[in-house]
Amino acid sequence: MEINLEQITLESLPSLSKTGSTRSILRLDKVHPIVSGNKWFKLRYYIAEALEGKKSTIASFGGAFSNHIVALAYACKALKLESVGFIRGEEAGSITLQDAAKAGMQLHYISRNDFNDKIYLKNLYHQPDWYWINEGGYGKIGAKGASTIFNTVDLNSFTHIVCAVGTGTMMAGLIDAANCHQQIIGISVLKNNFSIEAEVKYLLKKKDQPITIFYDYHFGGYAKHTPLLLNFMNELYLSEALPTDIVYTGKLMFAVNDLITKKYFGDDANILVIHSGGLQGNRSLADGKLVF
Ligand SMILES: *Cc1c(COP(=O)(O)O)cnc(C)c1O
Image (tube, rainbow, N blue to C red; front, side, top):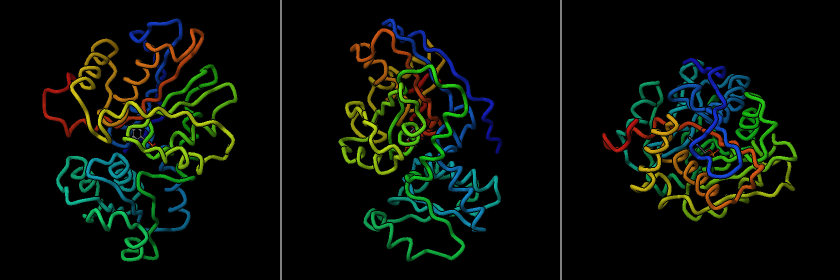
């Protein structure tokens, strides 16, 4: 695995230009095709802690299409650590999980009921030399890793930084790393998950920061998508050569475009969108739905 932070680029988004504001995108998706985007940043300090503690194995939780699970599998393989994934439901056989297994991850399929009781699962499976990471990489160590997204490229000139929100770990890291003239805006990809604000706040070092999350761009819920979304993603690719994914970044870009159209941002705004990766997830779509 070559995690290549040098590949990260800052690109402009001319086709979204309907107002005087300027827009750019940080292409974290370019670091690796599978360990893409924010996942490497979120994992880095967990992995460092596991290595320091001389653990043999990292275990975590996720669904059948989890970017976190497959990223963890690849990262562990590269570092010669064992990995174990506890997978919700009985949905074996997704391409994501096949990839994780190919990278050497041991997979356990867990009923939805048991999956919700992480303490029970940890007690049942725990080994002394295992290191556990929360579902989706949620946690303060993950947020600390996400803060280092700010070290890749100079982001100082941006007034607004917009990112997709799953567990909110990346958003928390960005809020902690941002300068005081910058507003971090989250686009939730889950339906009605209003508890996320408290979950983001819990991770923050800067507890008094306002948290701005939009909840209207989930397209039916986590990993749900509509022809409107797929159309938007195809048009974006045709006009900007920008690939996005159906779970996170397609919805993020749709939201940014919509907020620009609705004049949420002022004319002098300098907007940065974080392309947090996730493109591997598009492989769960039927052929021909996307032009890329
Ligand atoms: C996991 C993921 C996110 C969400 O990150 P959180 O820290 O869980 O909020 C956003 N975009 C992509 C592509 C992801 O894979």
